Length: 407
Image (cartoon, rainbow, N blue to C red):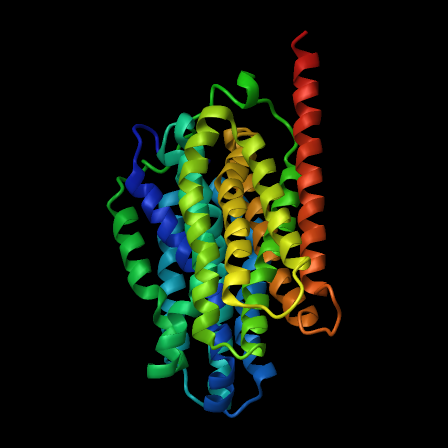
């Protein structure tokens, strides 16, 4: 059986909502436990390094399983697959939360979290497929902007939501954050009739400049997706480090980071509508350029970091991510045949996830280095600039090729 998780007829925005919930939840799971590392180490009698394995296990298994998940989804019933993965994702979270609170318990927590990462890989691949299939091709970018925006919001909001729970109820409570969202998404998808999440909707009749979308290689776009994700994800952890080093609280850091998330969410919805009208590629290039400018503005800052100094720079990065997120996925998904949609989605999500893992590692390693300008921000700005150049070249090259082919 060959089936992709795409709805056959009518725009079903409720399915897009379910995909957005999954996106928010899976990305939140990547970051929610970062604040809990000291508490996990104390509770289980281990070191912070050992406790971090529980976080790395989830991220590593998620990354490893993305490509196999795409191939599996390309050949199996989507509805059963996504509901099974969602059930496993929620169940392993509960089992990890109730693991024993000792040195053996951390082993069980790591094991359940690692298995959870495999389930998350299936959900990650399903997200763009559910969104693109639930609506007509003319509304594809809008739908993808919803899921992409909520996913980026999830990775930012993970520590914000988990912090109060960890302080008041212990670190295990952070592992249960996902349960209400999983129940909501599962309820929506379970009510979808069997077989209705299969079949291609086709490609948009128009792309950039009104030309038909062709079968162009997506490797440059996918590479740029990973570069932008790594550059942008340097910022939240780095800002937290900078503000707390300057005497601010974790709450101050969380409130400033929300500025980026809010700007991204607000602009993302508008970007989706614009991309459906004028094509996604030019918005992607403009968005990545805005991210680069925001990061360069942070690099050029001299003196101590204050909330005011950071807020507008973070807002600019957020605006760029909002312009770029959904349209970038729409660009990828509209550049491949429907039969290869699951494979394209898995490669795209692999690039994003790898970026979200690498970015915080760069921030943690380089942010506190006694060098001006800040080396972590300098690396992030350079990476974003490379992505902007790559995307602009790719767009220009394929527009030129298309014009030559139509002569």
